[in-house]
Length: 108
Image (tube, rainbow, N blue to C red; front, side):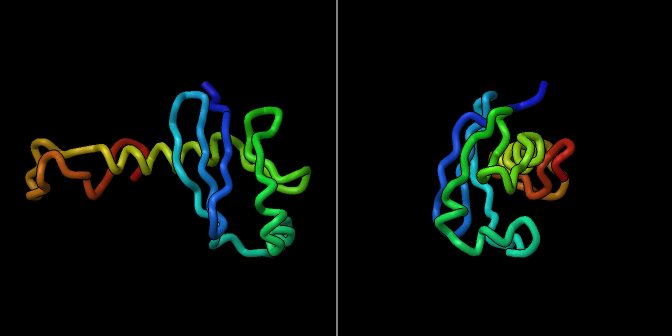
């Protein structure tokens, strides 16, 4: 099932908080994105703050920059999976009940 973005909040330092229709939410940090090519308008932070949910549930900035829901959902869900996964039978000495250092599933 294709996920759709339902809410966007622009934070400081080129970060955005996102919520998806499956309940997953989290932050994406765009601060390392070069301000070249299609990202030149981001040099103006007021422009960056125009981020919004597009008509197909994508993250958009006017008609110049967009990110598909899948391309931003996967990193957020993987970050959450890393935080909440645990190794209960860990031979590596990982402390059960603590975040797994390797994550799990396809998110390695």
